[in-house]
Length: 197
Image (cartoon, rainbow, N blue to C red; front, side):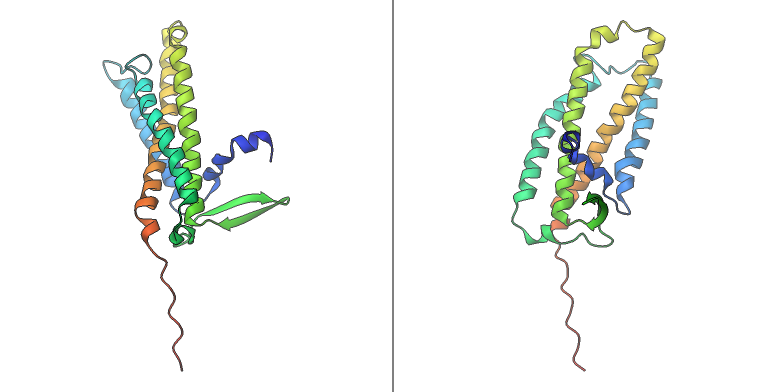
């Protein structure tokens, strides 16, 4: 694996597939981000995006807490001694296609593997959003020098992209909490022995 591949390994979560995953990864964040961006741009008194009390400021306040939570959750899931975590996911499960020995192999993920992928991706996403927010906050005085007409569209594009990944982080967090609070406590039923003839 290349150095870049190693650094971006948590993004393997996005390659995992099942019937419902596309909705919480892409559809819901896209719909919420578009509606939110249109609302922000249409308000008669604009909401501050940058600055001391802007959107990015408050999101970064939250991210400082979430980054530690995600990394601690990843460590706990990876080391938690519970047999139900190593069971396969019920139904069609979650499948991950990966390259092994020059060939693509598809495997079904256990609950532990899937939850670990989720918290790994959430940790990376939260760090990336925090760094992005910090960068634009540091550049705010230079950003104000951009032509107002151009700045309007740049502001909209930033809110759309930033909002999409923030909402994606929230939806994946809710799914991860669902698995931790509910699914891991369900035991896979043991099949009944065949009846004697």
